[in-house]
Image 1 (cartoon, rainbow, N blue to C red):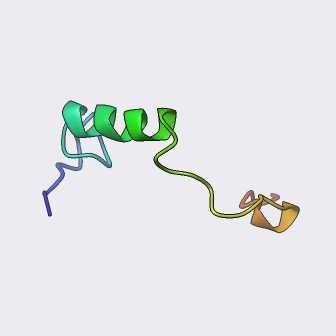
Image 2: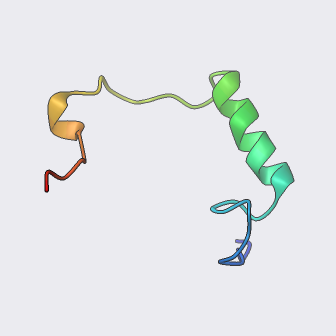
Length: 47
């Protein structure tokens, strides 16, 4: 596990390289949402 500086521009990643690798994984569909998104998944809070 790598430590991440709380002031890093790349949070939650440890570096720009790790950030780019993760983005590439999403782009090439190595990650996916495991189920359909439904209204109950909406995390917004009404004032």
